[in-house]
Image 1 (cartoon, protein in one colour):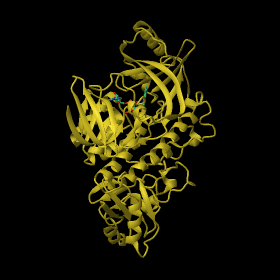
Image 2 (image 1 turned 135 degrees about the horizontal axis):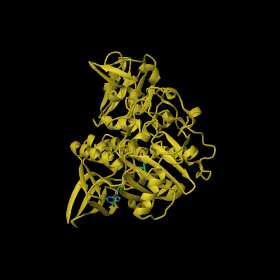
Image 3 (image 1 turned 120 degrees about the horizontal axis):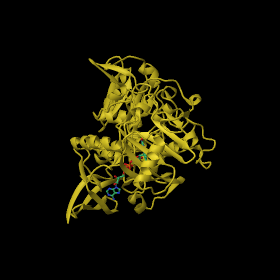
Length: 514
Ligand SMILES: Cc1cc2nc3c(=O)[nH]c(=O)nc-3n(C[C@H](O)[C@H](O)[C@H](O)COP(=O)(O)OP(=O)(O)OC[C@H]3O[C@@H](n4cnc5c(N)ncnc54)[C@H](O)[C@@H]3O)c2cc1C
């Protein structure tokens, strides 16, 4: 049997696995991805991608068409699409919403999963990842030095791959998680629902900017939405098997018109649940995406987006450990940082009106957080951050954090030479020290050791359009150390006499260099 070697084996070639392959390949980590299917599912699931996800894709040079400024996913209860429309239910009640501010260079995007996946595949391939569609992981074993995986191609060809690390992006049922014996906790199974995907010219009903409809009729309770490309999804709130004529009848009933041509495309059956894995890592295997946290579809885009953010967190850590810059202790921070995020999002799902009826008390007493706080202000507490204590809240808006270590470094527009860019564009692939004080440059030179550390001197290397010092909470002589994933790892309020030593100690701790 053919045997190959790679640094990371990713199992699952949907949104999260493909994102992992892109982020790893961008860091020049040899990566093999296997996906049992030959292409995308004909029934797309996800279609809403959040601004943070777009920021991460933008950093790879993958610019997706973005939603208009101020876009909000709106949902209304209706009798039928062409009938009476009732109340609109906001995802985040307006009293919980903070001010509209430009906190990111990116906005969200609406693209059906089966249109996005080919773009991700193309990007992953162009960055050097080895994608193998139609290839199933049959079984695997791990030891102290790596993981051995047995693969079977759709034509029956068998091979083994030896990898230093394994990422399980193999979905909510995750055979890898099950094989590792990792249990899950949470609200559990909510219900099983069926859907029908159809094509119909119904664009006129989208003119008000509302794209999600709760069909509320005594004989039909369903959810209707569109993928924005002529395809629509009718999601029943039951698990009944309907034949094609019955599906067509229900679609017509939801629309409320007989004169519209309808093409049935396919159907789906979905188990909606909310479960977070009790561990995100076992030995050399890491869970990501739905394998780590199955969250029901929400207007917050907590499903695929959370998984994409997982693998962005993991990719630079694997790159650092594989290159020998960091010790494997850095990898322990993946679970420490991402599991609380998954839990927080699970609780936010059930604290909100859309899921309150099925919460079964799991989010009792949980305050609804501002969307921007969830998207851009979740706090990481781990050994890869200094100064994020237990007294701090789990999430807050970026202007409230003002450069708090453990949070995403704020976005401010700056000018670098003739280019206008975001502070976010200054960070990857290595570490970055942001300061206005020239004395930190000499300290960084000594402190960096084998790490890649750049100093960005405000007012010299970049000319900010607004105060970076205020956004990052820096005094004139302070400095913020930013990780390769754009999170602030440490901050100094002043230049100490022994700046090189102080910076070196901080860097060694947060980068796990010894
Ligand atoms: C109707 C619906 C709408 C949704 N809308 C949104 C949305 O708008 N935004 C959002 O963020 N989320 C949304 N979600 C959730 C989102 O679809 C999931 O969170 C997301 O697809 C999870 O991605 P994943 O890569 O972790 O897992 P999956 O998409 O489940 O992919 C796992 C992959 O692993 C492969 N695989 C499994 N085992 C093996 C094996 N042994 N060998 C090889 N391959 C294997 C599978 O074939 C599959 O392709 C929605 C979900 C539903 C049901």
